[in-house]
Length: 213
Image 1 (tube, rainbow, N blue to C red):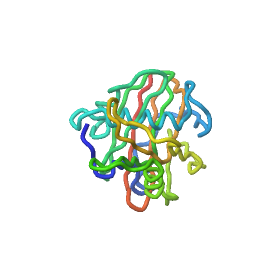
Image 2 (image 1 turned 120 degrees about the horizontal axis):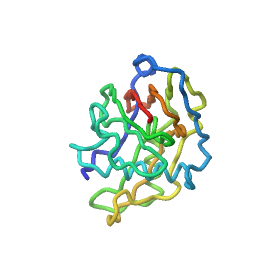
Image 3 (image 1 turned 120 degrees about the vertical axis):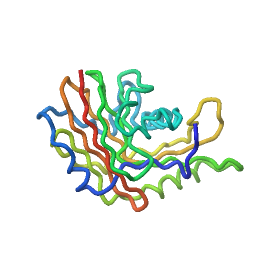
């Protein structure tokens, strides 16, 4: 795994760009799960940690995060929850993905991970504070599925209460903070998903065409 400066993962550009993507193929939609509701026996805070472990478990060449078209979207997926990735950069990203029916999608609209520096220890409290400062109140959060716009997204902040290890057999601590959403379970059909957000130092827009079967 290659560490990136500040380990930031952002999903935003302008809301207008997010909502200017391809039109949905049908009226099929899926429910937005409340941020306090567990998924498959685990809290969404815990799923945010698992999302980071998944996202950072790949080399750049085969990472769903650096994937230009969605061909890597099934990599490392298992169980009832299906993770979606954005990108590390700021370019608009459009992907297609096949997802098994019955999965619940889990992904961040915008988020950040802070890790201990290579040459020193850093208290967990400091890591959590840095992660919180990097994800202040967003200027915008966007979630749209087949033309349905979701509101109340600021309530979906998930901040890790305890620092955690991103990589197995590595004692480096990390702390996460950001806005995550869970949609589903998905029924069969085609979905057009737009999501993202705007923070002072992060800007990106992501669209997925999801074929669920």
